[in-house]
Image: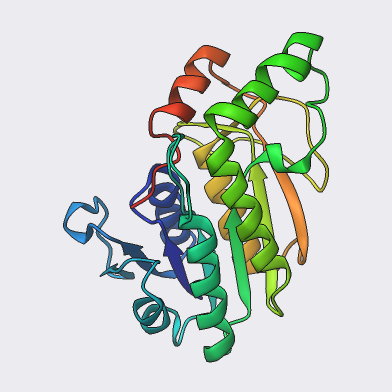
Length: 234
């Protein structure tokens, strides 16, 4: 299968690209910094392009079988538009070129349900503080992207992981269409889930949670990762 990965030079995008190659797919990795991309493979094409450029997005999407969006930006106070602009250009290009399968990454926060299994302090104070202050502009634009994707006529799936961290191996992670217990999702597990859904048409027209239950970091380390560049893409 021919897969496109947008945001390929971010920490999730690199894992996703590596997983897709390991699974035997041909991959087009889209990044604004192609000279910095760390992977090389005969089945890998690295394209320098910005998802905010609709012409560039069209050129990349044409002739592909499926698209994975692992776009991301770190928390900040300034307005965010990368998700919604990227979602608009990707869905328009896919519609124009007849590419049906789209898998995107957002966040478990967008389930709009309290974290199951957590105590009062986390449910009522800590997570709402992060969602409404530190991550407010990011989550607002993620919602806009979700609306764009779900309103399209494409075969879409939106994956909503929890706090992201790095791990070397894929684990026996959990997947559900409702919010799962736990605070963490490893990027290896997320990448595996993204590629499987793109290739096997799993969870069509669904918002799904992916949760890692083994080797999770401390909550403080997780917040540092989320706040200082963990979601940044290339």
